[in-house]
Length: 329
Image (spheres, rainbow, N blue to C red):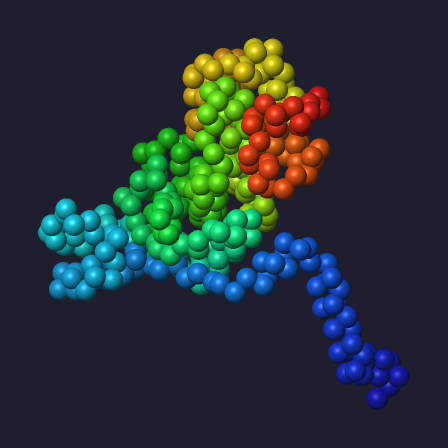
């Protein structure tokens, strides 16, 4: 063997030493949060009721009802479920869901990762049983987190261009994508930890949603800001570029402490655009008030890195005062 070829082969002891060194360095770089998440010894499996029902036959209905009573309210006669088994639209929904959510192991892993993040921040959090189903595209209730259960309505995440969404407004359909599933799950659980504001001011509404979105910063660290809030990439770019002007508009119009309920509809609620009543309206995304609230909360945590419990308990005006929020022009 030539000297050149010999130089390409290192002794095994050196290779093992280098490998061990890389591992130790990597472990040393883990944050306290990351180490705690790695140490959590639970994993959830998404129970695919949608697949069970897709393969069901009338003669198996009683046994399925015993295993999945949650999906069979007693006020409905068996004829309702049998008709559903034979419904062509239901069959098409089930087929579409199965084509998009093929890998249940990956779906379960993503769900486990999110639930571990929540458990880290709230140790008393009870990890739910997770099931997937279809909902006849009930896009207003895409996920349900209630009494130890997490129900994923997977037919609401088939992709914004899917034919089942052709009759929906575009601002709704744009978020009916697989990427939005766990953003919606985080919102559902976040609402359990962020108290609905008693104050009726516009600022209180913005800060409330800002806190919900800040939880996504913690729980979904690899998700884009656009997907956390439900903007397109272009809408997020518009918000970032116009942050100063949006804020100045709110200040000059004296909206912050206003209790006018119309402001929520104009700037907080999902909509095709925010309603400044200016020429820029059609370029703006809806929910711009949520986005501004998010930036206020982020700025507060940069200025005052308090623990999460303290942050979530802060009244809106105290948080706003502590944030000293002044976006650059």
